[in-house]
Image (cartoon, rainbow, N blue to C red; front, side, top):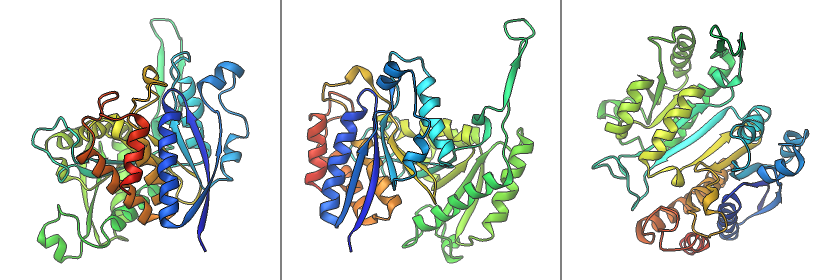
Length: 368
């Protein structure tokens, strides 16, 4: 019996609806080719709705989304809405209420895409960052006293409990193990391969300064590692991680880190893979509803012009299918995206691709 998936669509702001349309076009083609079906419902949660009603989200938003198998998001960000209102009121609120405790960010350089890293090729830039997504400094624990005076004090604390840390690390170990179930990661030594290792998981932290929080992360990391003997472990301070992401990205396979560090290094990674316009991500609840999105933002200046690059949104759709278990379809979309970047597009930049937004979507469909 063919599988059927209910998808919540949040096109969002700016060019979000345009790129989502192309992602849905590719999803429909993949569904036809790989024998599954989808049912979609679209929600107008975004800047225009906020300006009309004064409400960012309906109170029952999370309960509504729990009825779906996954959420497909276009972009959040409106030029007429103060920064932070929509981002915190929609993105962070849904991540927390749906307990999407993993942010998954592949850093993959596709063929034909320029990278600012001299001499690096798609063979060198192909790793994944697993970011803890609902804890740490982003929970807003803290406050301000004596505001507006010379003695003003502002505190925002990085807080983690063992459960939050361990579930993130276990997801990362599982992901690393499954990422190489057919063949070991290319970066392993012959000794590692002989010892049965298939992949490498690097903990990115700051144990020399954030001694309380990252003592918890590091201890838990090596305790959990005992359950995954096929995964090689490594540790790297966050500042060193940034250096090696630029100098030797081929050293990384999967990186796991806290919320704040993950937020920073994933954007660095996106630039090395060709820019925010080609990067996709997922907000994952492994046992619940997850949300998938392009990373590049709403790009309001390009709205309605048909020139925005939809490949990040299409890649996010592929990530969604991977999460839903449609691995063949996800792999086919990724291969088609790689063909289009390598053989068709003149540039990844809006208006310089050599094709319109919808034509790029058509190219991915034609090459599935």
